[in-house]
Image (cartoon, rainbow, N blue to C red; front, side):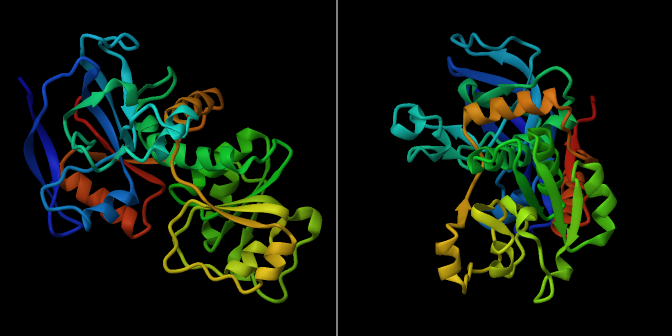
Length: 340
């Protein structure tokens, strides 16, 4: 016998949601039933709303408490605070899965596929893709880490930067403010790069050693070779002058594309890019081992998102989505259940 679950569903209007119910499957032997305590609101939810049918339940940064366990679940107990992320299932037996890159599995089930997403009072989830939240992280703080946190942490790891390296973080928003914290805790010298001078002090508070306004970029802007970056983490979706940013990299430097750009990437100085072996690298999320490592690292270094709390209602979700889409959020919106 399954579950009737109250949830918040999409409509044809990307800034409007409705309360609904849906039928979740009965608990499988490897499943857990999670009662939600909080769910982060990500700009990806806004993007997907225009791609899915009205009535879809979104949300991919959920945190809750396990209330029921499948017969073969041994790594969790009732009452555990847990979360789940983008990856909902995979084959567990291909080269990608076996190497730790399970999120690249060709048979993967990724949000919003598979239902049982986060904007709901509960969910039935495969326990293999559920993560225990370490002590010291509250539900509202852990929620944004399930997407934004693992996204920037994964990019940091994939870049191969060492703790003595120099990192530039482009954009000081929902992703960028976490990228500053993770990069600083990793041991790097961190520069915040933003169009918003008003965020300078906040960026320094999040861990940046210094700040550069991208409004100053141009022919007269010069950065010394020793001050260039081993890695740039680009967290924005705005169209950039790609050549300008690539010249900020040291030879063999990497420009990590976290934000999805508005339009194509156009590099004019391809010869310079080749001769200095600079690379533009796409990066997305991380697999199960990456999520686990990220949560441990965040807890060890007291990395927490700056959050704005909203009621776990259709109106609360709409308000959070609008704030996120209009870039008014400081810095992550989180729906919090009434019983918190």
